Length: 83
Image (cartoon, rainbow, N blue to C red; front, side, top):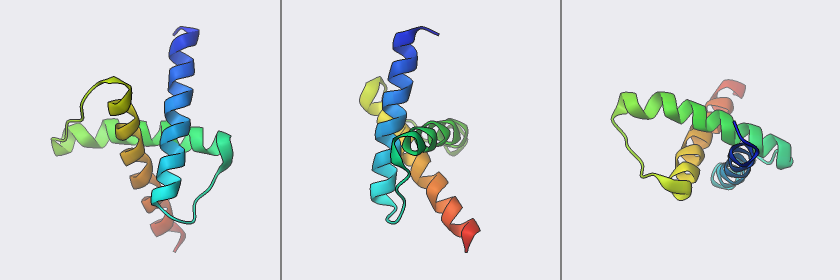
């Protein structure tokens, strides 16, 4: 993995984690937490979406949308478990 690829992963994770925190109110994790939530959300979405038959476009915006939806699912699951 190149330095550029790692930087893109970190930026996409940060944006996706922040967006998911805005969508699911009450969750703010800071920069590092947003990156982790975004990356884990992207992994979760990459496992779930093909099973459900959901396809999202390519490119950087598609990656951000993909990771954001996965992060929202992750935060909602965390909210359910905490209750």
